[in-house]
Length: 246
Image 1 (cartoon, one colour):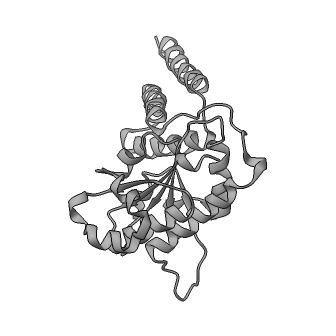
Image 2 (tube, one colour; image 1 turned 135 degrees about the horizontal axis):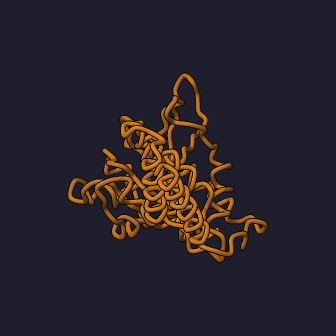
């Protein structure tokens, strides 16, 4: 696993001090790429530096975005962290299960990035925010007091990723770079455009179908050739259906 290809995304964190603690947690585990959904000027640099100690450079190099989608476009998968189960949240992976998957995607011969997304301290990730991710990860905790501090959650996920990187059997599994979410989105657009031509669904159902294909294809870690094959298949099906209707 390439820890340099792990991306930590914080969505509108409330507390500057928690950002600093998250930076320290990342540095403890050799993970250094931080992206924040929000504005840099909204945070107190002094408070961040106080809690980050010698890891303040992680915040100094952080990039800022307008949405989770923007922050993860160049990643092959984006894992939203949540402690709440729900109909829209699908199957949630445990940290160790997610780390194994991340190790496969970010093997030594791969340039693929994997994003881990954390919601803010008050609400966590909402359903709409989690839908911008391609899978969910949950950290088991007490039913009586299940809410984790943001930096603690970052520490736990980063630690599992770090531990997985130490396992020799996970190295060099992938010999290609899986597609980025940006490329997957264009593939999904092609598929759903052709499904629309076929009358497969009405317009109100298109968003759900796009979310399904985005999540499914990202987990499959497609190559460019596989994506093109899918696009060609759906285009031909649509074309043949159109001819048969004439």
